[in-house]
Image (cartoon, rainbow, N blue to C red; front, side, top):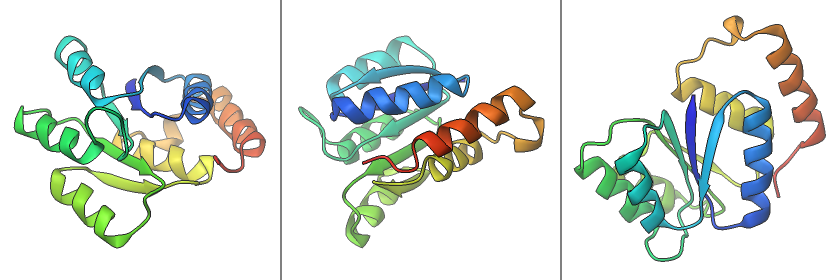
Amino acid sequence: MNILLVENDLYLSELLTEVLTECNFFVNTVSNGLTLLQLVEKHHYDLIILNIILPKLNGIDLCRQLRARGYRMPILFWSSQDFPEFKQAVLQAGANDYLPKPCKIYTLLKRINNLLNLDRRSIQPKVRRERERLEQKYLQLA
């Protein structure tokens, strides 16, 4: 499964990329909205994890543009902006889900699995053990 992570915080981007890669996802990372628009034109992604506050183009406008262009893959907003009006705005823009930062790795992985319709019972035992190890290692992203 291919995930595009759009995060302007370098530390969080590297941490989440490591976690997702160890869970057998292929992850591309970008730090601004213009690069996201270029990549989705050239590559297929099964999921976009999108921050709201980004340089050059904010996440809400990006989500609207993607949906207007016919992009139908799931979009998960992951942001420190944990206010009801932000959640409402991202869902109205076409996002499939919203998760506030910081969050537990388990919660993030569960949301990703749900959006990708992955059946946790079919996950190989090795991957399951790796996720458990990572959940203990990274109890919260901060």
